[in-house]
Image (cartoon, rainbow, N blue to C red; front, side, top):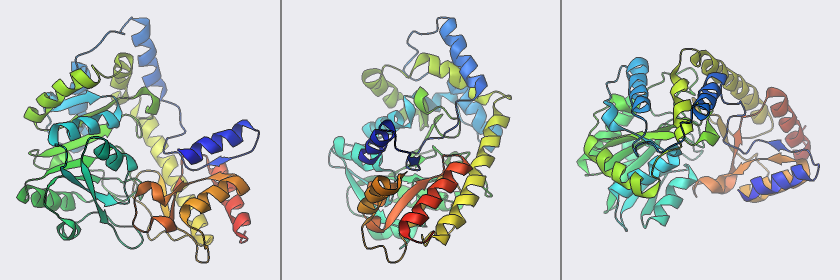
Length: 373
């Protein structure tokens, strides 16, 4: 956030900055969703909904799991939240007491551990492969396990690596968690943004002690609308419903009505076309960065990030690298330190959330700055 703030200061001063740091799609919200939101406002649909969300939206989310994944999910297991962040807060609040531990991948989305610490929980970080290209496995969980762990959080596709956990692996992790009396929390906020692999949901697994979090932000292009959801066991959803009444009252009402249109037949082709654009951007940026010496072990199968090791011969850590690159070359990246500790000083994250021409310009500037372009 400090780097983003500085990048915006440079923008305001007239400097040209290539923004590759922001984990937000650059596309506008699809027109059918916009029209639904505008229609809700025009119709005066601006009062509170139930804390669990519009019944029609809970049903539409459940129907989407059945239609796309063949998974039967009862609407009573779906709770609509103010973004995926609201869902995380509810799940952590329902599951944890102060001092409880939660196992996370290192690297992973930084708000997991910050939210846990705010709530009195303790994150236990599991280092991934030496180049951060892997995901959590039962073997890695077992080696990192300590007393007091109440839950395991996995993301698939993940931020920052873009890696995907196969459904078989998720099933093994769930079985392991159950044997240790821990819940499994799966963050699927990038579900749908997958390339060349099966788009699967953890909800295909046994629903006991399983919490699946998602949002309309990434695949559906509704970041600023702030609508997400969690699917969990019905008894836990009842607890989270009561928590939501006290913490949020409810998610944004016009945004919930807009989100209904995310599942319209007219919306789907727009979303699929945008997914293909993200794939093209990945396939353009990946070889270009490798050509500059960045280490990216394998093409990410999902999301819209490249988590790259710094080129050999770069003597500075990732924070200094990102700071100097912004100030001296006008390219904004996210340093690895944001995402954990393991090899963090040698990694940076690129977000391919900009047009191909902008990505090309970013690569040109980085190459010139490194003295290799």
